[in-house]
Amino acid sequence: MRFLKKVIVCGLLLLLAVTISFSQVYSQTLPVPREETLFMEDVATFRIFDSFNYFTPNGVEFAAGFWQIGTEYLWYCNLATGKIIPWLATKYSYTNNFKTCTISLRRGVTWSDGKPFTAEDVVFTVKMIMSRPEFGGEGWKQEVADVRAKDPYTVVFDLKTPLPRFHYRFVNFICTATPIVPKHIWEGKDPLTFKNNPPVTTAPYRLKQVIPDLKMFIWERRDDYWGKKYGYFPGPKYVVYRTSPPPDADLQDLVNNVIDHAHNIDYLQMEAAMKRNPNVIIAPFLDPCPRGIWFNCASGPTADPRVRWAISYLVNREKMAKTLWKPETTPAKYPWAAYKYMEQFVSRTVLEKYNLTFDPEKAAKLLDEAGYKLGPGGKRIGPDGKPLELEIITPVATTGYEYLIAQDVAQEAAKIGVTITVKHLESPVFDEYTSTGKFQITSHWLCGAGADPFELYRNLTSDRVMPLGQRAVRGNWVRLKDPTLDKLVNKLANMAPDSKVALNTYHQALEEYLKVLPATPVIQTIYVMNWNQTYWKGWPTVDNMYTVPFTWWGHFLFVTFNLKPAK
Image (cartoon, rainbow, N blue to C red; front, side, top):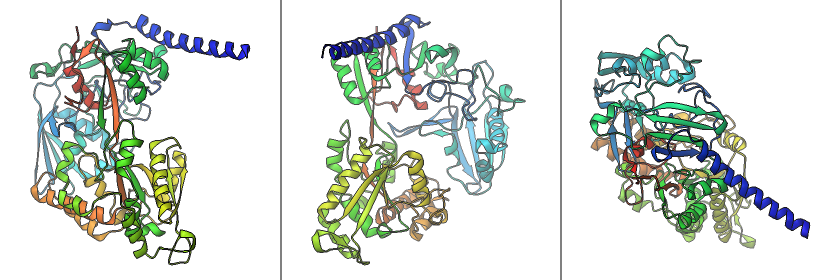
């Protein structure tokens, strides 16, 4: 017993030593003044310290600052406010029945080496991408016939077909968009091997230093940043990005003011941090993807929309939103996040007609209509004389939210005579099952609607369906075939997304989607950011969510513009 106690005590002392050592190492070796530094981190293990190539595999670390504060885009969509922000570009226009797209660039933008940002940079970047299949060039070549600089601040794209959403390629809706590189730096270089080190960008921060031993990147503010004359200038002079330490050490660093954001702690630890340090606050925000339940629309019982709706009626969204997800969230009523920007694509009349509610009685009635009636022993028997037995697969482990959602549905199904088993599959196996149609139901994330719901609907058109057993390579892995939705998608493809006629068609598409229900939304997904206000104030909060708060998105740039010294 004494030996066991000694082991426990030694273990606790070792954990405490490790926790303290993390804080001491980072605070004592930080080569920039703490009071001038924004200290960020990510759970990714940083390994690439000498390359900043956007386009090649392993060409740059994603969450080490380059994509977040070291790169800028032509436009940003602020999903927190619902507004499109013109940035490196000021406007776009279409002519020739959406076959010509003209983009106007902002005058006075400069690269970090002082050279002007012009249309030649955009043309060079696009042509470089188009020339390289490795960079997705084939997709661009299918759309773009020619791109040219009309003058130093005007880019003209001649398109092969009407593409009223072509400019979306340059809008940062979620995380990133197409980056533009400086022609005078990249020209003559092999883009497959060029490391772009140090990186030259238009952003307000330039790379100052990397410290591989500490898994750390340090960025320094440009005093000559072009945005200064427009009222945009970051508060912190330096921004540090590091790989997060283990959760306990990360929590300790946040509480002790070593860092300004801890990325490796969960919601319960955030609550603990707020109790221990009054300067710690949180900022919950919706993920683009609600949690959802998807159905195989080509085989088995779920090929019948009545069965799909029956399963949907067994989803107790209110209960799941309040008890399963931390922090508490809300039920999802449509297949995308409840962002202000996306509200225009929702019809309340349609939502009332196709109400995603918890109603086991309606579920039982639909199953009766579909031929699955209660038999001996309280089990539902199908038209083939066999019990109705279904399986829900999920890529999330048994303690994960998506697994618990599936488990709850299975429990409700059992009450009306349906046997549902829930199975966790590792991601590669899950991908194989879903892409080849070797599944009945899944429980995971309902993604697809990015810039607007068009991409979600387009990925469900009949022309993308592959035979069962073959991999779905163009979307529509649920293998939905619905001629009405196909026609609506074809109409939307030739409409300006912000036109009144398009919005009406979007509402019709939502109605058709809910009618056939290839996937049913479950709950809105909330992720929580934490901030330490000891050194910096002006963070996005529940009361002032001026931008998307996710630290790994390119929108984090706007957080730096709002931060001011706390003292």
